[in-house]
Length: 349
Image (cartoon, rainbow, N blue to C red):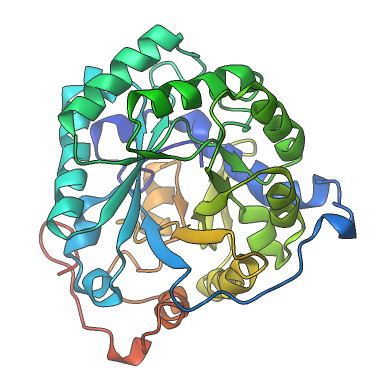
């Protein structure tokens, strides 16, 4: 998704991303618009070895790590979305610092994905400006070694959508700035321009990519693998599903109303996850979006909150059906999950 911290509207930057949630409809509707890839573009389905696929979480709330169910699942990877120039915003940086320190304390490996500046969402920074801001961030967190240069680069609400050349330059620069880091070459959505955009990116990149990020909401929701297979046929190296999940409800910006699925739908979509990952042994990680949204749909409607909920934990800290799906995928019996309750600070403990 193009926004970040969607689950925390009460926090400073989280109230500034109205345009970003309008992309939700584009993701869900894209399945009907996407050109079908040829059957020859699909790799044969094969099973993963037990230790070759890792499942983590994409969620910007630091309270995720203190939830006893998260610790019980044993997730070792988590993804954080931050503005590319977050170092300019002390209040927001303090919040993300809390997330990073919580991940570190719980021995969770963070994947930091840079995103647009919510103050100037369509600004495409120069290489100099991008490099200075990112370098400052990396200096603050020398123990972070996994990065994504830009979030959902082919989405029309991102300034990189029409400039894969600049996106490739960000990747080259970030790779050179941290030669010991793992850097995903691009982070794309499985929407109609995915193949063309990615092919252009590959032509421009000077550093040979070894890792890629894919947000395959369309394939996952449809129970298909056409777009994921097409992406795999285009790119070399490992592919991580850096953001994907089943939506319970979302705000549709174009029509200004809430689209409500339900928890059963979200669990069914989550159930497609392992089958989708199994189409290639090159798929090595999944980051499920998301852990928990702290407010209900009724609260969002009452306050006019522009948001999205694909959490596997309810706002009241009880478990949704999708949690059971993820727990089983990680080799756990969900019936044995520890209990947690909502505390006065709004966290699950």
